[in-house]
Length: 542
Ligand code: VG1
Ligand code: CO
Image (cartoon, rainbow, N blue to C red; front, side, top):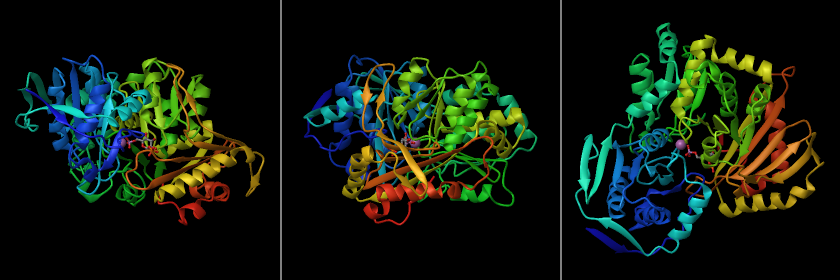
C-alpha cells in the first residue's frame, strides 16, 4: 500500500547544466533524494501505468537511490520500471532503452565526470520520452515544485535484487532487471561496419581504451574486445567502481594522464580513447596526437558518410556556442545547416527530434547523433574506428588532411575550478557591464570587433534561453568566451574558451598553447582573471 510521507522543501534543488548534482552528503539528508524524485513525478502528466527507466554510472549511492526510486515509482503509479543489472546504465544506453522500449522517461543517476565516493558527488537527471534530458521548461518546473513540496509517496517492501536478470512485482508494478549492454551493442552494430573494424584490428591496428573505472567498462569490453576482436587488455580500468578507484573519471589531459603518456610514448598504440563516469563523453587520441573535441566533431561530420549508419549523408550539424567553429567550416563545405546552441545536451533534443540535424557536439568531449538523445562516448570511438578502417590512414594524417582542407581552429578551454563564488560572479557581472565599451579596444595586438552575451531562440519550440555566456569576437576571427559551469558541486568553476582560426594556407602545425598565448593574455587583461580568482593559472586546460 502507498504511504504518504510528510516532508519539507530544500531550497537548493535547482537542476544545473545536466540534472541535480550535489555532494553525496547532501543527498544523504533525510528525504533529500525523495523530495527531488517526487518533484519530478509531480510535474509529469499521464504517466500512470507507463514505463520508467532507471540506472546510473555505478557510483557510491547508486544502488540506494535506485531502490528508493523503484518504491516511489510503484507508489506513484508507474506500470513498470526497467533497471540495468547491478544498477548500471550508461547515459547513452539509458537514452537508447527509453526510446527502444517506448518508456515514458527515465531517471539517470550520475554526476558524470565528477569524482565518486562518500565525500564526493552524486546526481539525478530526468530524461523525457525521446530519450533526451528534460528541456529547460521542465527543469524549471521541477525546481519550482521542489521549493514547495510537502509530501512524497512510497511503498514498503524488500529491496529488488539488482544483480539478477528478470522480473519481480512491487505493489502492482513490474520491475525488470535488464542487461544494460545488449541493446546498446546491437545499436552500435547497426550504425557501424563491425566487419571492417574487425579487419582493421586483425591487421594489427592497436587500441587503448581507458574506461576510468567507470560505466563504460562493460560496454567497451563487450564491443571492443568481444565483438570486434581487440586483444585482452585493450580496455583498461574496465571494472566500474563506486569511487572510480579514487580518481576523477574525467577524460582530459589531467585525469586521463596515463593514456596521454601511453599515446605520446615510445610504443604508442594507433588509437587511444577514454570515456567519463557515465559514458557520454569521449577523448580521442592518435599516436602522438590529441584531437580536440571540437576538431573531432568536425572530422566526424566530414567523414561520417563512411559509416553505414550515415552513408546517406547528414541533415545538419549542431554545436554548443563555446565549441569551436571547426564544424561550421565542414557544414559550409558540405552545404549543411549549422545550429549554435547553449551549453548542455538538452538543447540538441528539439533539433534532433525535428530532423534538422544528424550530428551534435560540444567542446567538453561530448559528441553524438540522432541514434539516441544524449552524447555518446563509445559511439564517437566507434565512428572514429569505422572511419580509420575505411581510410586506413593514421589519426594524425586524417587531421592533417582535414586542416589542409578546412583550415584549423586552434582551441583550448581554461578552467579555474573551486573559485570563490562571489569573486567569480563579480568577474562575470563586471565583464557583462563592460561589454558595450569593449568593441574596437585593442589589447596585445588584438582588436575586439563584437562583444555580447549569448542567448538562444529555439527554432523548433520558440523558447528563449538567456545568459548563456559572454562572447568577445576579435578582428581576424579569434574568439574568447567566458561562462560559469553549471555542473560543479563546490565553489564556482570559471570556463574560458579560446579560439583562433588559421586558413588552409596558414600555419597549421603550431603548438596549441603557443598559438593561443596572446589570446590567454588578452582574456586576463580584459576580464581580470588573476585579480578576481587569485589564481595565476587555470586548474585544467582541455
Ligand atoms: C559541462 C560541459 C557541458 C556538458 C555538461 C554535462 O557543463 O561544459 O558541455 O554538456 O558538463 O556533461 P558546465 O555547465 O559545467 O560547463 V556531463 O558528461 O557532466 O553530463
Ligand atoms: Co558525462
